[in-house]
Amino acid sequence: MSTATATRSVLAQTRREQGRLGVLLVAPALALFGVFFLFPLASAVFFALTSWNGSTPTAPFVGLANVREMLGDPAVWHALGNNLQWVLVGTAAPLLIGLLLAVLIWSGVRGVLAYRLIFFLPFLMPPIAIGIVWGWIYDPVNGWANRLLEAVGLGELARGWLGETGTALWAVLLAAVWSYTGFVVVIFLAALQNVDLELVDAARIDGANAVQRLWHVILPQIVPTFITVTTVTLVGGFSVFDIVFIMTGGGPGNATAVLGTYAYENAFNFSRVGYGTALALLITVLSLPFVVALNRVQRRLALRGMGGGAP
Amino acid sequence: MTATATVERRSPVNDRVPDRRSSRHVSGSQIAKYGVLLVAAFMALFPVLLIASTALRDPAEVRVDPFALFTSFTLESLQRAWTVGGFSAYFLNSVLLAVPSTVLTVVLSTGAGYAFARCRFRGRNLLFYVTTLGLLVPFFALMIPLYFQLLQMGLLDTLVGAVLVLTASGAGGLSFGIFLMRSFFIDLPVELEQAARVDGCSEWMIFRRVMLPLVRSGAAALSVFTFLQNWNNFLVPLLYLPGGEYRALPSALYLFASGRTMEVGAVAAGVFITILPVIAVFVVAQRQLIRGFMSGAVKG
Image (cartoon, rainbow over all chains, first blue to last red; front, side):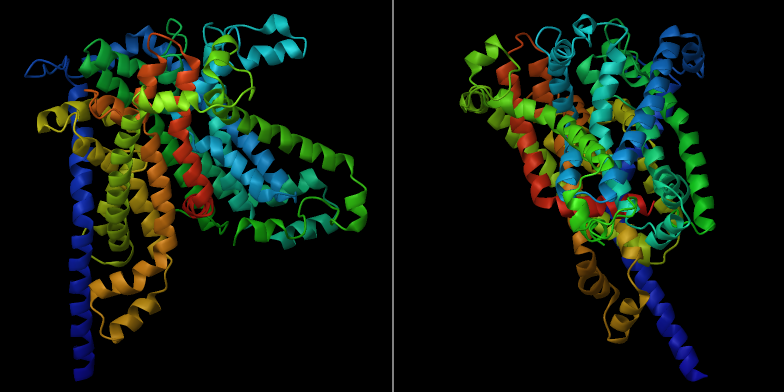
């Protein structure tokens, strides 16, 4: 009896010490996070309810006027359309290309390490470098895009890719896909390592061909990774900014404007801090449901014992 | 667990096991496979080669035909950018931004990650979920209020301000760091902790001497990732260091490339200087970087 009490009191003391250490270790990180993330985020919500111009000492409170203005602002709908294209193509293309390349590498080739290195490199490039070098590739006079078209006899298609309203968004998107695909390749390669090879072998013995094995045996085993990658890309698609800002600044006209560049323009060029912040929050609000939905799917899959698993 | 170990195993998709006969007789699907991979690899590398080529060519030639590949070799453009172009100063500023913010992020994330994984205290789960908010909310949402906040705190246009912002809310900041480090600590067996406790270790010693050494490779992966994110970060130096005294490489390049003369050779040299450390870090630490990425993303 007395040993039991003693053990309990030792346990309680351990708990207490553990708790104290935990709080101590968390405190500095949370303090920084509070000041430079949570506080500005709360300010953002407040700013979004004002018509502040950034220079007056007080911000005039306008309630939901910014939201009403957004709904009636054709530029917002135009930008939203561009975001939607960006999200759809910018998610689907790297996923499909990345999956294809990962499976090809995984299926046994020489020089796996070299491929992994080469494909991952574009993902690590700074956006400013991506923007500048793809700007050169799209150069109307000397760019390699047009040279390539001329070389294969499609010279009449040559144009100033970033300067024309019809092609600018796609041109920027291609640069982003170029950078992002390598990330998908590396992540899928990692996930493929966990695929149960015995199942694949069994399917082969049962007469399933390569495509059937990929679709029915291999893909189901990497679904959690598929969802993680999709989530990351989707959120990135809504909040896209750097690469568009660098390559076209939203132009020509507003052909490539996305919510991000439109929000920036309002806040920093037109001194409409309130409206710009409201737009920036709209981006967040739009992407959240996707994250939650995908997270829920992933959790359900994890419960069904398909590996992966939510934190 | 490494990629090579698995991939060098028997080919799981192809029917044919590579043996002496199949290596002599190359099938059509093999050709197609290598064809696709080689074309993709070329496309992945081409823009990087274009940067290197343009930066290393004779500037006079670049003026005539800007994008020809590797027709000459000289360090002239690089030297001019480094000295006359002021890129040595931008480089230093980038180091002063990326290194302290990386150290701060990794140290704080390791501590907090351990606490969230293994210490029980009130509000632990709630606080952890709050920190993961940073993974959901794009930096964009706070970028505007943060500008005015730094202005009021007297931190606008200071290295300290930019470093703290990179640490707290950048893409490679605390949210990701804590999330990743917590996932490393959570995998460690409880028995280790208990054994150390029986041996009379204090809670701090358990963290410092027993658990910390076990996540060293994870922390290294986080360091590499965080450094690259902060080195590449475009918006933070552009917005919060507007004065020009602490201009970092990305913002300098942006102003340079969108400025008056489009001197391709000079811009290329600047881009090359910016990506050299990225390539160097990547080549040296790619194994750790990729492993860190995999454990973060594959586990979800």
